Length: 297
Image (cartoon, rainbow, N blue to C red; front, side):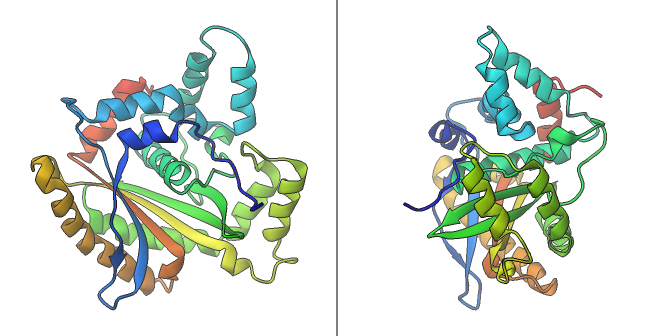
């Protein structure tokens, strides 16, 4: 049986009904395939499509994003009424209005990797924060999974910008910096690795794979995942029938821009997945997120 890491979120189908994807594959102008995920928030009759997404975040995504899996299991294992609510409130205390924009991007990155790539996070950086107003440095997410017997470690980068192309420029630079310092992420994995079906044998297997002394093919293991959320109000003004086609056309231009910037950084585009999600307004998104979650200063 193929070794598999168990995703952390248990309600994938529900989340997929809220955070959907467009089924499409992309090639660059030179016919090279690139791995992409075009996510979107459907209206579903809601006057504000953000509300179902925010409810899903509050009902479980937030706690799973913030805490180690073992800590969540311990907290929810306590048979007390309101345990899940208290866990969410504890998670929110790790965030501040000062860092909320970056952490919302990281939360969406975490969600897309867990739900659509079934790649759980290997460590939770935000749970180790000593100050809620200080951002986390290094990769925005560290996830992994076995595909056809081969392990992929995803160093994640997330950006929430008004302008996609500005975001892609900064993301390419950040991905390069994270790869150059991957040893620092490996040190954290060795100390803090945690996911649902982790046992001693699986932990040792992964540590052997990620050991630069033992594994001469370590570069084959390293992959990049990038989430970019951006403002595109015209997508939210078009009809449901027009949405898919317009989104695909806009995405085609943006995808080419992103991967060209990766190549300028001398990064391997075949080892990078780009995940995108359009919003009406990024500033309004963050403002509503802070208000809905009741994130303090």
